[in-house]
Length: 69
Image (cartoon, rainbow, N blue to C red; front, top):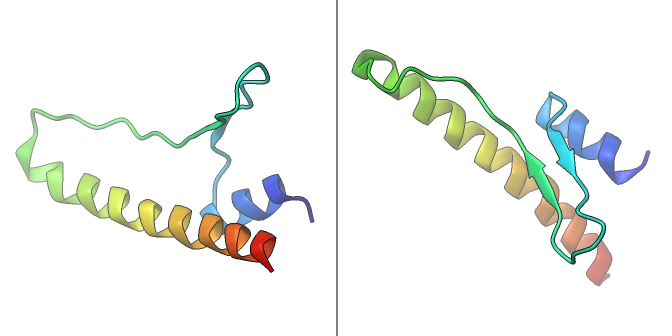
């Protein structure tokens, strides 16, 4: 399984990939539409953000650790 497949499987979705070939940095974007005017929905957005931040940390932390070994 290549890293892209591993990342998508760990995230449970297909993020937007921008390999930015001319630069060193790469961009992997995961978005969600929200209504920022609806304060009753804010907690759902924060939960989504936290959940996906943890998923990103776990998958990329694992990839970084495996490169160091």
